[in-house]
Amino acid sequence: MTDYHPILKGRQAELQAVSHVPDELAPHILPIFDLPPSEHGPITDACTFSQRAQDSIPRDMVIAVDVRHLPEPTTGTRRPLRDIADDLHPWGIPALPVAHLNDSPAQLADVRYAAAPYGGVLRLTADHTEPDDTETDAQLRRVS
Image 1 (cartoon, rainbow, N blue to C red):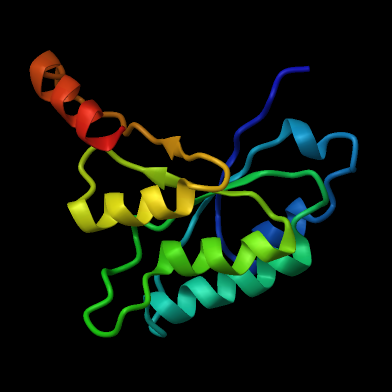
Image 2 (cartoon, helix red, strand yellow; image 1 turned 135 degrees about the vertical axis):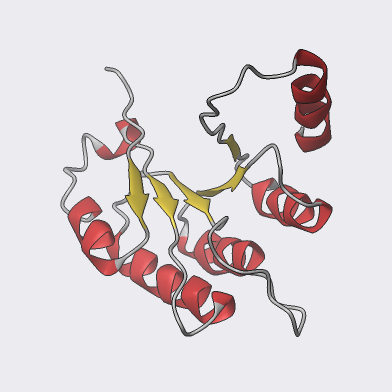
């Protein structure tokens, strides 16, 4: 069976839709949840997503989590991607962090931390210019 990797918003409706996936299909679907920002801030957004995911993700389903749209926290030591990984791991929900070629060193540290138990996902974005092979190769080495 071919695997399916839908890119979904990390909102309640999308998580509720995923909760209806039949058990026999769950291992073949890897939803990539793209978390949208809210007025509540990135730490609250991460916590809200984790709580909803705990109630929605079917048994045997692996998910990927992309926090690129959440603003970087400016205070405290909490980090959205780390918090999500820490929240979902005890529930047995494999949450693969999503890395991007242009992530900052702090973002890549978060990805490495969150990827430790299960691995991660590299998400490449479409660019309308011809990529520079040397620059892309250097970015890939930095991310891996």
